[in-house]
Image (cartoon, rainbow, N blue to C red):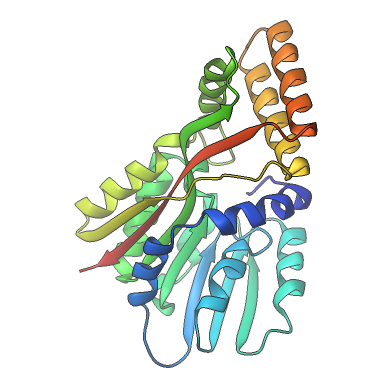
Length: 266
């Protein structure tokens, strides 16, 4: 379901952690039970980035159920958090595209996910919202890509690459035609229509210039996506060569737009 390599997830986690919106997370935490242990269901967990981001901010005993269909990434997550006092991590191999209904959301205090909503279809998202609202639990969705990608110094091909990447984001990621950059706003609208209160806030990636391995994989991914949707190969090679040179001499800065969303029952 995630379709991401452990190497990429490992490289992006520090960038994710720095990007998360503190105000959105504070609002989410305020909706959790304030005493006693907390039980959280995390969807599309990968190697456990949501646990890494939130668990140390919860000053109480907590149990997480991580769900993904990649058992290797779940094994990484289980090994990462096995020795943390007061933190119990369980995992379940699950294909959310077909088996989400098997999860009992009302057995948990909250539902979370990270870097996931932009991979799913509007139909799946509507079903997810329906299931969350039926449980009357808080929901936190972090790091949904919103269509913004800015490089400095600028290049004439930048906007072409960005538009191509956004088109590629809307191809099938395992659920059908993905919402891509629209996902966070569609989710906000669906939750509001269902009677939930919603707060969103930017959680942009702003990697430092010395994050060379991350930036190289990021730009390689952009170039591959642009190639697959038909951007001129010669122009793309020139753009890629320039960007890789700028990464090597640490002169490239990048900002990638993301949004965090918290939805709470009234």
